[in-house]
Image (cartoon, rainbow, N blue to C red; front, side):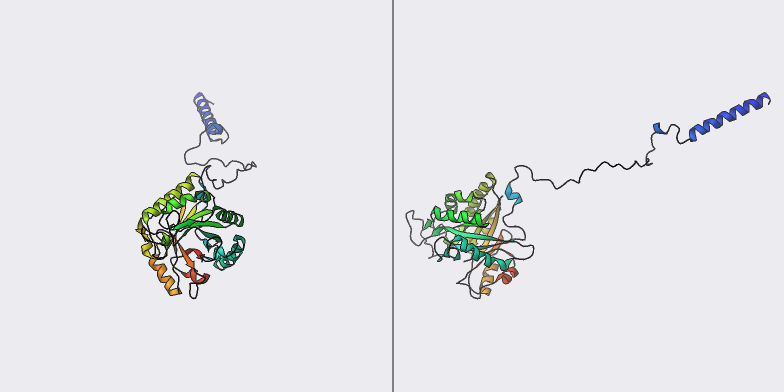
Length: 322
């Protein structure tokens, strides 16, 4: 092979070796970075156990119980017996002992149950009773003895019922009287009701006129009760406002919602079904309250049953028997 031919052959051989080095997939591949957009090789499956999917976060420590435990669930209903200790003259609750009243209440509440709509029993106990005479304080109202109320506080807790303390305050401000029952309202299962029918002004007497309350007095009472719930980390409470005439709550549109409280407007009119529904529709303010409705054993004519009550609109959430 002549010199020029030998030089050409060497050059061709060198070029072939160089091309082989660059096309060998195993040569230098560990150090070569992948190009953008080009997937790398799929890693081998591992037998290492995977961590479980995260569960729903727990409530932070210190979260108020009223934020997680509504006293009146969205689809739930409350059914109550109403009265005062030791007498049936003011309602069915006082006709017998708390334990016997509870058994009767359970029978009354059972027809209201619906799938997915739990019913919770309630004792609504009048603890400040309006009087036709002035009394020592000249406020035309007296408080039930603490021992009698304590019996219902204990019984409701043991039986799994709510207890609502009902106030008929005569000439005294609702807030002033509510403060006297703070000892019971500190219990997690005890709530409050105010009855403007029996809240009269100077110169008036209960039962001779139908009383009334202004929105300001309602708001002062609800603000105090809300603070009690929040500061003592209590479950949500009811504040029930009884009413059967629009005039009984003056400037009702100014009533304020409160932290830790479920406001209930309880419509108390009696009569036949048409009269009761007319009263309800005239008074109801579902934009401000959950709605309540009273059934009278003696005063109602052709008393409404559970099926008829369930048909009422706005929907009734709290029924009480008197």
